[in-house]
Length: 185
Image (cartoon, rainbow, N blue to C red; front, top):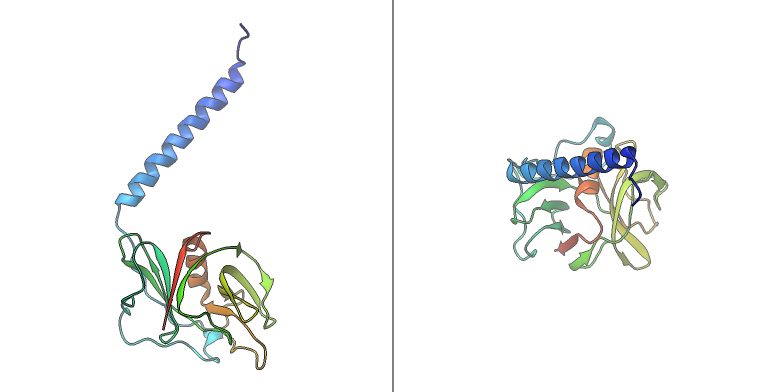
């Protein structure tokens, strides 16, 4: 029988210990309090452009948007909710839709790109979360790298649903491949 080198035993022990520690921390985090965030005010660079508006206070997740962990996008309210598995909104996001929008229905996050890339309107974007194609345009959530919220390019079909930088980062973390997206009127 061949002896296993001590270095392999040591590395294996460290790996097993690290996995156990991460598992314990994940279980503790799941049991802990959950943050309740609402959309922040637009950044100074966004104020010269159209900005989303909400009534005072958090906006309720639309009825009929499904159940379980999902992203809900209301076309009429220009709002996105990141909803946890307990059907509670963890973040409410005001958005600036592009010129091409998705039809109401249920979709699934497919590909994602952390970016930065140049959007169809020529703006550098990041945290791109794609979920459908409509009229030949990719429909995706994203944020401008510089935090701006330019109006959609005139005459250019754009499927980007833009949000503030912090909201884009939250969407990127929440909207992993396979996440359900419910689009409502």
